[in-house]
Length: 516
Image 1: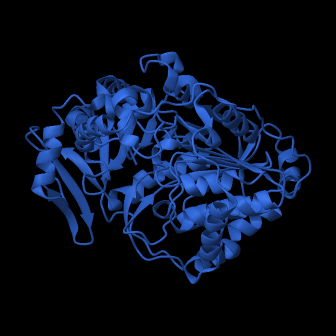
Image 2 (image 1 turned 90 degrees about the vertical axis):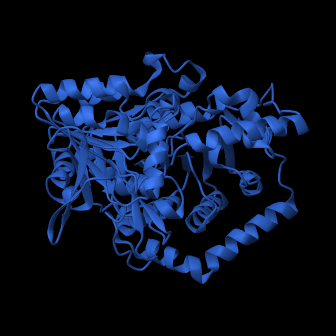
Image 3 (image 1 turned 135 degrees about the horizontal axis):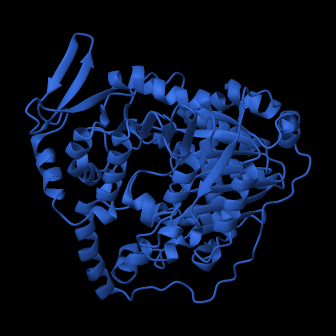
């Protein structure tokens, strides 16, 4: 999910001007009491003891387990929160107040009740309507909430854009969930029903990974850097504290939901998932590999976007290394820009097979991003790069005990090189991830995981996505769909109305690429 769509931007700015005429534009507090805190030396806890033997047997390495299923991803978070004994450090771009979001809020509260120190850091872009809930959580002596790059006005947020657009356009896109300095989850999933396959009309096909061992300390250190940064504001400096009555109201709502039949299936799934049980018992079948955390400095958003030395992209490129034979890229929001296109073409010109999967126009949740990709599509194809666009129904799958079958929109961000190294994280191949937002992820030296992604391109992706090719005359593109009846060729953008195609074509000519 993106920060802005071009269509919404103009209306936001116009509305913001009107709002500021009606109410004085608010300002962030000039002086903030921001006590510094660090990851705890948690000592012997249930989680640390469960993995101690495996960590000792693999010195300097990281145990990893990709979470491919949304149900497992939700269960893993619930199990980790329930098992934590000393600390929980939780950092997200989006946290929805839906069923899974509220269940995880309740899990954080229950951890605090057990004496666990809970630090919750949320980007403020998507917290509209959450202030009462966050204030109630923040009222617990063991649970502190901070908001990253917050809106000064909690009521008329749109007014902040008129005088603080440059600041508010920079967001914390990081996602991490760390317990007892022993186990963490890092990747692309936000917190919300659509990220956990919870029966929403559209489910995001996403990816994150459990990590144990060496890299967990680095995940904790990056959390500390963001938590203690000048852009992280204690909730109490922005929102009035919740009184006892308000806290009781929120607590009752969360408790009622947790005890409801609606939530029971999720809680039961978390309890019965073998992954969760194995995680606490220390019997997960992890791959132990060299790993490196790659992240932006939180101060990136305080500096001009042109400051390349502040950007994660070059660090990620260095960690992944120079491809010699294959490079497979998955990015739901793919806007390569001219510089990125030139770089990809240079790689392909060296004889490297480059394959890219992104969303089709029918599958994407942000049309303007697709427009930013279309500008470079033919150039990439002419350079020998293979392009695949996920079909709107391409990742449709049964959801077992929880939910129904939903259409899928790609949300995973993962890249593999030479079937030997793979990145899993929050970084998209677009200007927003590269220049504006902050990101985090892990680079794993894992032949098994990197090969798994490349084999998906070999076998599965062509059946779940359109392959985009140049037409025989080289003057346009066509979409190749593999069906049970054979190959079907589409001469126009499949699965969408002509009006939407016209809108995207118009956006191609607007100077909005830097926003995407």
